[in-house]
Amino acid sequence: MKSAVLMLAIILSAGGCSDTKQPGSEAYSAFEGSRALEHVRAQVGFGPRVPGTAGHAACRNYLTGQLSQSADSVWTDQWVHVTSAGDTLSLANIGAVFNPAAGRRVLLCAHWDTRPRAEHDPDPASRDLPIPGANDGASGVSVLLELARIFGGNPPEVGVDIVLFDGEDYGDFYAMTDVLLGSTRFAAAARGYRPALGVLLDMVGDAQASFPYEGNSWSWVRDQVELVWDTADRLGYGGIFVRQLGPSVIDDHYPLLQAGIPCIDIVQMGLPYWHTQADTPDKLSAASLEAVGRTLAAVVYGLGREY
Image (cartoon, rainbow, N blue to C red; front, side, top):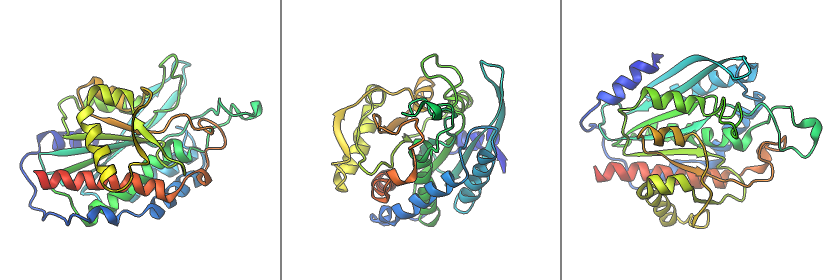
């Protein structure tokens, strides 16, 4: 695998259009929610993906293996982070590049680690246990793995960069310590990177999915929010991508926005099993994953037709 530095250099220096033929307007429909749901189950099956655990290592191998089946290039960026408590974490961002020669690019991202504490669990005895992370982590990653399969078989005209961030959910969001580690590192290394569209997926698989406009996305890159929500509405998913302003969320898109990298967040907050032991695959549905995946695929292929 190429290093992250080399892959970023390729992305930043790329120019011109690809020679790939434009896919048909219905290419987005190849996305299968059932396949994405199987990816959720596979990730949860490794156990919690907390940095430093066997589940984390096994999942990393799974993710790189899956992406390598479809992408033009796959890279990993490994580093060590020392936490505010003095613990040492071995972390890895994972990336996949599609159509590296294309000048116009799309960034699709999610975090693949899981939270080491279920602090909202109703059972106090479970609050120091790591969460399973079916929705909080695995859902967004699974949509991207299925999109990778689609893009590998039906290359879009635009370039696509999939990035899976590590260390998003480790620490304290109130103190802002030891959180958003992978996205912060990526943003620092890619300050000259300006995709035409960036989308972060986080908690996108609930059976009763509902995605309002995330507040920071709406404030920073409203036109990109409207593009995605308009596409969802056109595909019949307007009941899921609701046209109302939701909360502002400090998520992996935030370091990117601060670095000048446009990125919106598709996220569902307020779920009763968030950061509990109940964040399990039975809460998710293939239909919700499919709505998100087909919407993003239609956006990506649509950008290619405009180019």
